[in-house]
Length: 252
Image 1 (tube, rainbow, N blue to C red):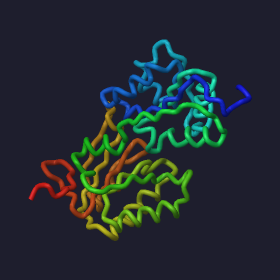
Image 2: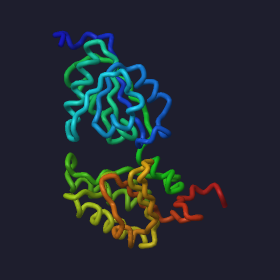
Image 3: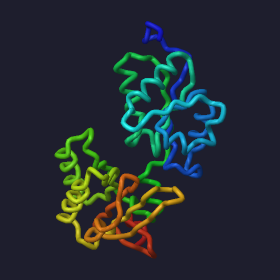
Image 4: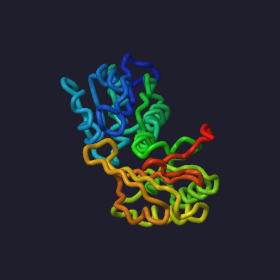
């Protein structure tokens, strides 16, 4: 590595949101940025999802929870003059790698060109499969407390539930995290009726995708895991023709 980290190199880092995984859900900008890169860095399932774009390119793969390592490699190689694509599923700026890349570059005073490439987020992809549940004000909340104290997450759930906002819950349940989704359901039950529509999409846009329409009283009985995204409607959300819809008020 050069000693002068403040000198801008000739390389570039694209932080790319590749969408939920299906090639049909990629943006043109994402495909073009990967094509322009000589090095692709990512978590194994993300690299597998774009295998058709990787021919002739150097690939660096790291395991889950090695985000810092992936980001450092991508930034360092961009500083050395290479064009690098650091890939995330969904949108790179929604629980993805964009923030980490910008934080790390600033903390290390690495003057490298970084461009964030938007992708289709899991919330938007799941909402489209369910119908139109995000037509009004909504929030995204991750139930993973690996990086955020659970007490903080509870405050956010309370605020969103009390504000009658539709919510998309990321990382709802895992083998080790069982109470979080149950706690969230209890919070929303204090503000909304048990018939409030709840949609669950698992393995979004994958061949194994599952779509479930349930309600606040019964959705915990469904199979929900780390590949699931849960959308809880607000007081006006309804099922219309088998689709989950939050009316915006256009149609009177």
